[in-house]
Structure formats: structure tokens, C-alpha cells
Length: 158
Image (cartoon, rainbow, N blue to C red; front, side):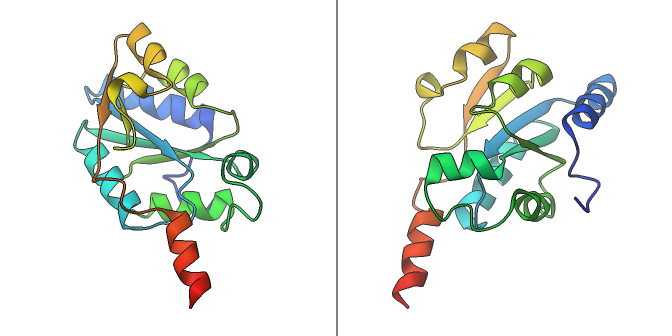
């Protein structure tokens, strides 16, 4: 991992503590980000507006394969993390291996857990975790009109 924005879980915990000590609020977003596209950028830019610092958690390769199926991910976790970290709106990126981001949310307790518009506040799977520590959930980004699946289908037709 070649950028200082891409950090280990332990390093992220340390940096989030420093950010909080400096009085900054933390937003948290997550996803696979396999073939970065405009929907991803809009989601992350919108998430960044929810707090002073944006942490992005990226599914590891095994979990992407489990979630998305054979042939995925297209890009390795390290490459996906580096691409997401290159966005100005992103402060920290961490790769996670668990089936959900629940353990990371429990560890970091971000002020805001940001999810895309394919969710409602009530349908976010980790909602109870966020409520348990006093955080809030925000639905951010534009309508879900973009997907890596659709992009791959368009490419394969060419």
C-alpha cells in the first residue's frame, strides 16, 4: 500500500483518536469500489460533507468475490484502496476482511455512518450498532444509477 492515506486497522484507530482529540468529527463510508466510477465519487464526496474527516473501508478480495460473484473483484484490494485514497475527499482508507463493517464501526464509533441511496436509514444493516454508541446514519450520494455491474456489461458489449 503506497499512500499514507491507506492504513492498517491499528493505524486507523490511532489516527481517528488524534483527529477526535483535535476536535474533528468522523464520517465513515464503505464498499467494494471495484472499478471506480462517478457514482462512487459522488457517494464519497457527499459522505465527506457529513463530517470533518472521511474514513473509507474497502472490502477485501475474498469478501468482494463472495458478494459479487465469480470474476470479481476486477482490481485487487490494494489497487482499489489506492484509487479511493487518491480522491481529495477521502482522508483514510482501510481494507477489511469481515463479512460486514460492524466490527470496524464498533471499534471506531464514527460520528456518522454514510450509506448510499439504495438504503434508507431504517434498512442499513449496521443501524443498531451505530445507534448503540450514539452515532447517526446518513443516506448520501446520488440515485443509484451507476454500478460496476452495468459498466462491465457495457464494456463486454463493445
